[in-house]
Length: 427
Image 1 (cartoon, rainbow, N blue to C red):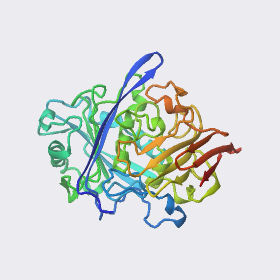
Image 2: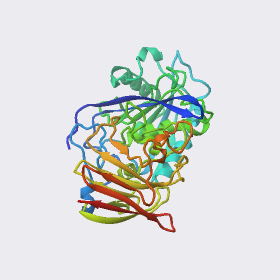
Image 3: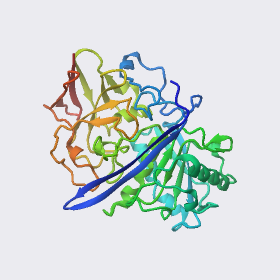
Image 4: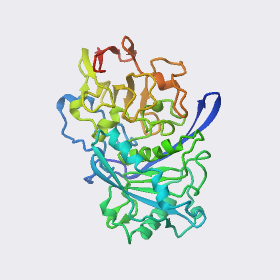
């Protein structure tokens, strides 16, 4: 599919979370993906091959040309590889009007080894994420931060182009950019406003019009500003999570929050909410990234009633995703979520049901979770966890029905190994 020559996606998100009796301001990361996809690039996002099992073909929904970071399978080419050994270049940057706070390696330590551990756990070891920092000191930019004109919603040109050009010039004597799959620019936290006031963190992915370094474009780069400290006292454990969220974009994943916040997906995917307690990715995203194999997908495309046995997402092995296609562009996904792995805030284990639409742009709600207990207020009071959807999962005996299509999804029972049996009925 031919991609547009220039893609720009940028959605700001801000929400509010209730923690006990106090109202806690929750500012969620602004993320973006910009650039032209590299059709000829060997670095396809997700190592999924275009040659797939024919039985899965009906479940490989795709979006039309122009959809920004489509949820379709497989992910378009041009993003960073998401399996095997992936080398991440980390550069710590400061400015004359925002000198680095502490040492540059202290800034690096805010994100590692936590980010590498998160990816290893989420991918079941299929992603060996290796951060490197060949320049251990702050890279001082030749212009002040103010001169670059960077603010929330700033496009790549001219400010970010100038910043990347200057970063390359300063780092190039010590860095061979050809050795890396992606770049993390860790800005000194005192550059720009606090994350509680506004969020600048952003990713430019698949951007072949980016400046070139050592013969390759800096096409997949995440920029992290400020410190995502919500005041709950959990920054040491949760502050790093902005980086795996931003890196999700360099692997081709869209934002799942909307302008209204995290109400579409809640805390079930780090591409929706990356503040607060640890959370994982949806099984659909793990399939896109190649962390779940084709043999772990159950495609419910036939009429009548079919049975599917799903193993919990944190466990390695077993069928992880049942998908019910409604058309060539959308369908329903079912997966089992239990506390374990990267999921530490789950208060109601069960089968998560959500709608995937490959025709919806990033940040506009490409995925919507079905709430089995609508308007319940949820089952968690953890800071910065979307409470209403925390008890969205379906338990044995519960049924979800899509009245428009006539599709019915029923959770039947749980076996002694914790696997859930579900029945899918479609006209």
